Image (cartoon, rainbow, N blue to C red; front, side, top):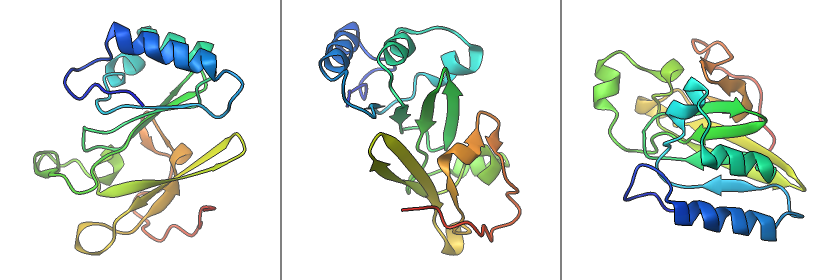
Length: 162
């Protein structure tokens, strides 16, 4: 777990700490990295290399997870799943007024994680009621272009393992 709550990136000191920590724990799996601001979105979309990705790839990191942006985003590069967990209650009014909705990752939700051995299972649960349709899906069913399922059907029949 790292802290970039006061900046838009991770400092060189934090990246050095991360590399040392991953090296000390090289025999442990899975490896997940958490921090607040998802500065990785632009570089991953553009295919730009960044030190965080180089370190994560070298040490077999499975997931890099951030928050902050009030939008669900999930992209995979070199087998590393990058995920921004969206809004669990923060205001999304401006995005919704621009016509962004579920398929753009603008929905109130939480992510439920389950780790069994070295396997990571992440399930996204949209709230139900007046602010959501209660959809639930496996995180891997969402890619850099959004959902890989029909978003008009709120009756998702699969019940992800918990």
